[in-house]
Length: 211
Ligand SMILES: [Zn+2]
Image (cartoon, rainbow, N blue to C red; front, side):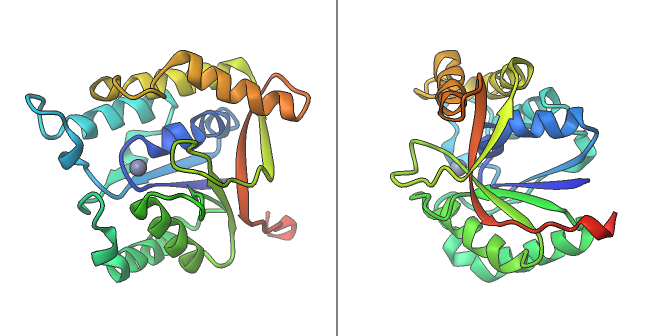
């Protein structure tokens, strides 16, 4: 099964659905990861401008995503809206090239302008496949817990290691073992299990006859 992860910025995919991506890899699904920005604007002074890109390759590698299935585009942070049509066309090309069965995007309720734009354009571009909106609590004032993906400790640990690969982002409150495990445990408890990641269901398509 082919999976496509849309990360507006490097690291969004790992935070939003890292545990689920690891589980896909373990199930031998083919995971493709696309970041829309190199985020050079977000790099702290004194660090190499491309540090987030190298950290992204390390992080996605820790989840088991093949390097040739990871790509990064060059849209400027917080200015995706100036490139809305280009981004839509990019998504349509990805749909044709990869033909994913499941697409992971930010939530349509995400307050970050770039995240919201990717979520909206993905809904437009991928009309015929399942789309799950991932949770980023620091950007989601509203979030509908609709799909719980129950995960085991190995998945959460892989997510944590992926997140911690972004050494240049360690100052963030959520780049933290306690937070990653706490969030997974909280959603696990909501569904009577140990750990889970939670998603909004943008669209659910069951395609049982195509296999
Ligand atoms: Zn982001």
